[in-house]
Image 1 (cartoon, one colour):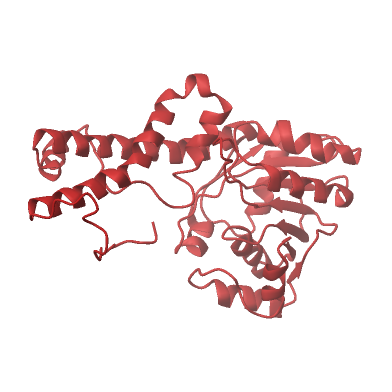
Image 2 (cartoon, rainbow, N blue to C red; image 1 turned 90 degrees about the horizontal axis):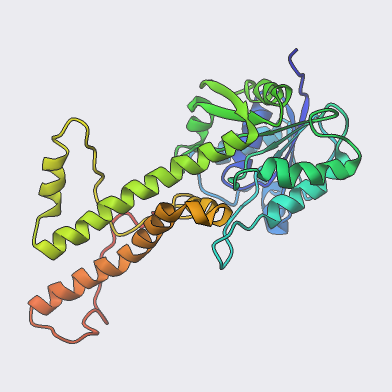
Length: 325
Protein backbone atom coordinates (compact mmCIF):
# COMPACT_ATOMS: atom_id res chain seq x y z
CA UNK A 1 0.00 0.00 0.00
CA UNK A 2 1.39 3.40 -0.99
CA UNK A 3 2.31 5.85 1.77
CA UNK A 4 0.89 9.36 1.42
CA UNK A 5 3.26 12.23 2.14
CA UNK A 6 2.13 15.80 2.65
CA UNK A 7 4.99 17.25 4.68
CA UNK A 8 8.70 16.45 4.71
CA UNK A 9 11.53 17.79 6.83
CA UNK A 10 14.95 17.99 5.13
CA UNK A 11 17.92 18.24 7.49
CA UNK A 12 21.01 19.75 5.88
CA UNK A 13 20.68 22.41 3.17
CA UNK A 14 23.87 21.87 1.22
CA UNK A 15 24.49 20.67 -2.32
CA UNK A 16 22.10 17.73 -1.88
CA UNK A 17 19.64 18.82 0.78
CA UNK A 18 18.70 22.18 -0.74
CA UNK A 19 18.04 20.89 -4.29
CA UNK A 20 16.12 17.93 -2.83
CA UNK A 21 14.02 20.15 -0.57
CA UNK A 22 13.24 22.47 -3.48
CA UNK A 23 12.37 19.56 -5.77
CA UNK A 24 9.92 18.11 -3.25
CA UNK A 25 8.41 21.56 -2.70
CA UNK A 26 7.86 22.20 -6.40
CA UNK A 27 6.06 18.87 -6.63
CA UNK A 28 3.47 19.85 -4.05
CA UNK A 29 4.89 18.80 -0.70
CA UNK A 30 5.14 21.11 2.27
CA UNK A 31 8.85 21.15 3.07
CA UNK A 32 10.67 22.29 6.19
CA UNK A 33 14.29 22.92 5.23
CA UNK A 34 16.53 22.72 8.29
CA UNK A 35 20.13 23.76 8.79
CA UNK A 36 22.05 24.36 12.01
CA UNK A 37 24.26 26.98 10.35
CA UNK A 38 22.72 30.35 11.21
CA UNK A 39 24.28 32.03 8.17
CA UNK A 40 22.71 29.46 5.83
CA UNK A 41 19.29 29.93 7.42
CA UNK A 42 19.61 33.73 7.35
CA UNK A 43 20.73 33.74 3.71
CA UNK A 44 17.86 31.54 2.53
CA UNK A 45 15.24 33.36 4.57
CA UNK A 46 16.37 36.59 2.94
CA UNK A 47 15.86 35.31 -0.58
CA UNK A 48 19.44 34.41 -1.47
CA UNK A 49 21.30 31.09 -1.68
CA UNK A 50 24.70 30.13 -0.31
CA UNK A 51 25.83 27.65 -2.97
CA UNK A 52 26.28 27.85 -6.72
CA UNK A 53 24.40 25.36 -8.87
CA UNK A 54 22.86 26.24 -12.25
CA UNK A 55 19.12 26.80 -11.93
CA UNK A 56 19.03 26.31 -8.17
CA UNK A 57 18.47 29.95 -7.21
CA UNK A 58 15.34 30.15 -9.38
CA UNK A 59 14.03 26.83 -8.05
CA UNK A 60 14.60 27.74 -4.39
CA UNK A 61 13.08 31.20 -4.69
CA UNK A 62 10.01 29.83 -6.46
CA UNK A 63 9.57 27.15 -3.80
CA UNK A 64 9.82 29.71 -0.99
CA UNK A 65 7.43 32.14 -2.71
CA UNK A 66 4.87 29.37 -3.14
CA UNK A 67 4.91 28.77 0.60
CA UNK A 68 5.82 25.11 0.11
CA UNK A 69 9.41 25.59 1.32
CA UNK A 70 10.07 27.10 4.74
CA UNK A 71 13.56 27.47 6.19
CA UNK A 72 14.15 26.70 9.87
CA UNK A 73 17.02 26.01 12.27
CA UNK A 74 15.38 22.96 13.90
CA UNK A 75 13.07 20.18 12.67
CA UNK A 76 9.30 20.02 13.07
CA UNK A 77 6.81 17.17 12.97
CA UNK A 78 6.42 15.80 9.45
CA UNK A 79 5.45 12.68 7.54
CA UNK A 80 9.03 12.06 6.44
CA UNK A 81 12.51 13.18 7.47
CA UNK A 82 15.46 13.32 5.08
CA UNK A 83 19.00 13.54 6.49
CA UNK A 84 21.47 15.08 4.02
CA UNK A 85 24.30 16.33 6.21
CA UNK A 86 28.08 16.18 5.63
CA UNK A 87 30.12 13.08 6.47
CA UNK A 88 33.81 14.01 6.15
CA UNK A 89 36.62 11.88 7.55
CA UNK A 90 38.65 12.52 10.69
CA UNK A 91 42.42 12.94 10.95
CA UNK A 92 42.74 9.16 11.25
CA UNK A 93 40.70 8.78 8.02
CA UNK A 94 37.69 7.21 9.76
CA UNK A 95 34.23 8.58 9.00
CA UNK A 96 33.05 11.56 11.04
CA UNK A 97 29.39 10.78 11.68
CA UNK A 98 28.85 13.59 14.20
CA UNK A 99 26.50 15.51 11.88
CA UNK A 100 24.46 12.38 11.13
CA UNK A 101 24.20 11.61 14.83
CA UNK A 102 23.15 15.17 15.68
CA UNK A 103 20.54 15.18 12.91
CA UNK A 104 19.08 11.86 14.06
CA UNK A 105 18.96 13.09 17.66
CA UNK A 106 17.12 16.24 16.59
CA UNK A 107 14.44 14.14 14.88
CA UNK A 108 13.63 12.09 18.00
CA UNK A 109 11.25 14.62 19.63
CA UNK A 110 9.35 14.98 16.33
CA UNK A 111 9.15 11.31 15.37
CA UNK A 112 5.66 9.82 15.20
CA UNK A 113 4.23 6.42 14.37
CA UNK A 114 4.04 5.84 10.61
CA UNK A 115 6.84 8.31 9.77
CA UNK A 116 9.61 7.64 7.27
CA UNK A 117 13.23 8.57 7.97
CA UNK A 118 15.70 8.52 5.07
CA UNK A 119 19.47 8.88 5.36
CA UNK A 120 21.13 10.26 2.20
CA UNK A 121 24.52 11.18 3.65
CA UNK A 122 27.33 9.01 2.31
CA UNK A 123 28.08 6.63 5.18
CA UNK A 124 30.06 3.49 6.08
CA UNK A 125 28.19 0.19 5.78
CA UNK A 126 25.65 -0.47 8.57
CA UNK A 127 25.39 3.19 9.62
CA UNK A 128 21.61 3.14 9.07
CA UNK A 129 21.00 0.03 11.18
CA UNK A 130 23.77 0.39 13.78
CA UNK A 131 23.91 4.17 14.31
CA UNK A 132 20.74 5.89 13.10
CA UNK A 133 18.16 3.27 14.11
CA UNK A 134 19.22 3.05 17.80
CA UNK A 135 19.15 6.84 18.12
CA UNK A 136 15.66 7.11 16.63
CA UNK A 137 14.44 4.28 18.85
CA UNK A 138 15.15 6.38 21.94
CA UNK A 139 11.79 7.93 21.02
CA UNK A 140 10.16 4.73 22.26
CA UNK A 141 9.20 3.75 18.70
CA UNK A 142 10.66 0.71 16.96
CA UNK A 143 12.29 0.95 13.53
CA UNK A 144 10.49 -1.27 11.07
CA UNK A 145 7.50 -1.66 13.35
CA UNK A 146 6.40 1.85 14.25
CA UNK A 147 8.28 3.88 11.64
CA UNK A 148 10.06 3.27 8.35
CA UNK A 149 13.82 3.73 7.98
CA UNK A 150 15.72 3.74 4.68
CA UNK A 151 18.97 4.74 3.04
CA UNK A 152 19.37 6.18 -0.45
CA UNK A 153 22.67 7.52 -1.77
CA UNK A 154 22.89 10.69 -3.80
CA UNK A 155 24.53 10.06 -7.17
CA UNK A 156 24.72 13.45 -8.84
CA UNK A 157 27.36 15.57 -10.53
CA UNK A 158 27.92 19.19 -9.43
CA UNK A 159 26.73 21.46 -12.20
CA UNK A 160 24.11 18.89 -13.24
CA UNK A 161 22.44 18.27 -9.87
CA UNK A 162 18.91 19.41 -10.69
CA UNK A 163 18.74 17.31 -13.84
CA UNK A 164 20.40 14.25 -12.33
CA UNK A 165 18.24 14.29 -9.19
CA UNK A 166 15.28 13.74 -11.49
CA UNK A 167 16.74 11.54 -14.23
CA UNK A 168 19.30 9.30 -12.52
CA UNK A 169 18.41 5.85 -11.26
CA UNK A 170 17.83 5.81 -7.50
CA UNK A 171 18.79 2.95 -5.18
CA UNK A 172 16.66 2.83 -2.03
CA UNK A 173 17.51 0.41 0.76
CA UNK A 174 15.22 -0.16 3.71
CA UNK A 175 15.78 -1.88 7.03
CA UNK A 176 12.84 -3.96 5.84
CA UNK A 177 10.85 -4.23 2.64
CA UNK A 178 8.10 -1.91 3.85
CA UNK A 179 10.68 0.81 4.57
CA UNK A 180 12.17 0.48 1.09
CA UNK A 181 8.71 0.70 -0.46
CA UNK A 182 7.89 3.78 1.62
CA UNK A 183 11.08 5.40 0.37
CA UNK A 184 10.05 4.52 -3.17
CA UNK A 185 6.68 6.20 -2.63
CA UNK A 186 8.45 9.37 -1.47
CA UNK A 187 11.00 9.68 -4.27
CA UNK A 188 8.47 8.70 -6.91
CA UNK A 189 7.03 12.18 -6.39
CA UNK A 190 9.76 13.69 -8.57
CA UNK A 191 12.28 11.03 -9.67
CA UNK A 192 11.81 9.88 -13.26
CA UNK A 193 14.73 7.46 -13.35
CA UNK A 194 14.44 3.84 -12.31
CA UNK A 195 14.03 3.22 -8.58
CA UNK A 196 15.62 -0.02 -7.41
CA UNK A 197 14.80 -1.41 -3.97
CA UNK A 198 17.24 -3.29 -1.75
CA UNK A 199 18.30 -3.37 1.90
CA UNK A 200 19.90 -0.42 3.68
CA UNK A 201 23.43 -1.82 4.01
CA UNK A 202 23.57 -2.81 0.36
CA UNK A 203 22.49 0.71 -0.61
CA UNK A 204 25.24 2.17 1.58
CA UNK A 205 27.82 -0.07 -0.10
CA UNK A 206 26.58 0.83 -3.58
CA UNK A 207 27.60 4.48 -3.22
CA UNK A 208 30.97 3.61 -1.71
CA UNK A 209 31.64 0.97 -4.36
CA UNK A 210 30.85 3.39 -7.18
CA UNK A 211 33.37 5.97 -6.04
CA UNK A 212 35.95 3.49 -4.76
CA UNK A 213 36.04 1.64 -8.08
CA UNK A 214 36.66 4.94 -9.84
CA UNK A 215 39.43 5.80 -7.38
CA UNK A 216 41.13 2.44 -7.91
CA UNK A 217 40.90 2.74 -11.70
CA UNK A 218 42.36 6.24 -11.55
CA UNK A 219 45.15 4.94 -9.31
CA UNK A 220 46.27 2.30 -11.81
CA UNK A 221 46.30 4.92 -14.56
CA UNK A 222 48.36 7.25 -12.38
CA UNK A 223 50.75 4.44 -11.48
CA UNK A 224 51.10 3.55 -15.16
CA UNK A 225 52.08 7.18 -15.78
CA UNK A 226 54.93 6.89 -13.27
CA UNK A 227 56.08 3.60 -14.77
CA UNK A 228 56.02 5.12 -18.23
CA UNK A 229 58.04 8.06 -16.96
CA UNK A 230 60.60 5.69 -15.43
CA UNK A 231 61.02 3.72 -18.66
CA UNK A 232 60.89 6.66 -21.07
CA UNK A 233 57.54 5.72 -22.60
CA UNK A 234 54.87 8.11 -23.90
CA UNK A 235 52.01 7.22 -21.54
CA UNK A 236 49.35 8.67 -23.84
CA UNK A 237 50.44 6.50 -26.75
CA UNK A 238 50.75 3.43 -24.52
CA UNK A 239 47.23 3.85 -23.14
CA UNK A 240 45.78 4.47 -26.58
CA UNK A 241 47.37 1.27 -27.89
CA UNK A 242 46.43 -0.79 -24.81
CA UNK A 243 42.82 0.37 -25.15
CA UNK A 244 42.72 -1.09 -28.65
CA UNK A 245 42.19 -4.40 -26.87
CA UNK A 246 38.41 -4.98 -26.77
CA UNK A 247 38.39 -5.80 -23.05
CA UNK A 248 40.72 -3.05 -21.82
CA UNK A 249 39.66 0.48 -20.85
CA UNK A 250 42.48 2.27 -19.04
CA UNK A 251 41.65 5.77 -17.87
CA UNK A 252 43.84 8.79 -18.56
CA UNK A 253 46.20 9.75 -15.72
CA UNK A 254 46.04 13.17 -14.11
CA UNK A 255 47.35 15.23 -11.20
CA UNK A 256 45.45 13.23 -8.56
CA UNK A 257 41.85 12.89 -7.45
CA UNK A 258 39.60 15.73 -6.32
CA UNK A 259 35.96 16.49 -5.79
CA UNK A 260 33.71 15.96 -2.80
CA UNK A 261 33.41 12.17 -2.95
CA UNK A 262 36.03 10.11 -4.76
CA UNK A 263 38.92 11.12 -2.51
CA UNK A 264 36.81 10.63 0.64
CA UNK A 265 34.48 7.66 0.23
CA UNK A 266 37.14 4.91 -0.10
CA UNK A 267 38.36 5.72 3.41
CA UNK A 268 34.96 4.66 4.75
CA UNK A 269 35.72 1.11 3.60
CA UNK A 270 39.25 1.28 4.98
CA UNK A 271 38.03 2.58 8.33
CA UNK A 272 35.25 0.00 8.59
CA UNK A 273 37.33 -3.01 7.53
CA UNK A 274 41.06 -2.19 7.41
CA UNK A 275 42.11 -5.84 7.35
CA UNK A 276 40.39 -6.56 4.02
CA UNK A 277 40.71 -3.26 2.15
CA UNK A 278 44.44 -3.11 1.40
CA UNK A 279 43.97 -2.46 -2.32
CA UNK A 280 41.60 0.42 -1.60
CA UNK A 281 44.07 1.97 0.84
CA UNK A 282 46.93 1.58 -1.63
CA UNK A 283 44.90 3.30 -4.34
CA UNK A 284 44.31 6.24 -2.01
CA UNK A 285 48.05 6.42 -1.28
CA UNK A 286 48.88 6.37 -4.99
CA UNK A 287 46.41 9.11 -5.86
CA UNK A 288 47.35 11.30 -2.90
CA UNK A 289 50.99 11.15 -4.05
CA UNK A 290 50.23 12.04 -7.68
CA UNK A 291 50.31 15.85 -7.20
CA UNK A 292 53.92 15.61 -5.99
CA UNK A 293 54.78 13.53 -9.05
CA UNK A 294 53.37 16.30 -11.26
CA UNK A 295 55.34 18.95 -9.35
CA UNK A 296 58.49 16.89 -9.88
CA UNK A 297 57.78 16.84 -13.62
CA UNK A 298 57.70 20.65 -13.57
CA UNK A 299 60.99 20.77 -11.70
CA UNK A 300 62.63 18.37 -14.14
CA UNK A 301 61.45 20.46 -17.08
CA UNK A 302 63.08 23.58 -15.64
CA UNK A 303 66.24 21.62 -14.84
CA UNK A 304 66.43 20.60 -18.50
CA UNK A 305 66.25 24.30 -19.33
CA UNK A 306 69.31 24.89 -17.17
CA UNK A 307 67.70 26.00 -13.90
CA UNK A 308 69.20 23.55 -11.40
CA UNK A 309 68.03 25.10 -8.11
CA UNK A 310 65.83 22.73 -6.05
CA UNK A 311 63.52 25.71 -5.44
CA UNK A 312 63.23 26.29 -9.17
CA UNK A 313 59.43 26.65 -9.02
CA UNK A 314 59.56 29.48 -6.50
CA UNK A 315 58.19 32.64 -8.11
CA UNK A 316 57.03 30.81 -11.24
CA UNK A 317 53.49 31.22 -12.57
CA UNK A 318 51.69 27.94 -13.21
CA UNK A 319 48.49 27.67 -15.23
CA UNK A 320 45.89 25.21 -13.92
CA UNK A 321 43.10 24.17 -16.28
CA UNK A 322 40.22 22.45 -14.53
CA UNK A 323 40.74 23.99 -11.10
CA UNK A 324 37.34 22.96 -9.72
CA UNK A 325 38.37 19.31 -9.38
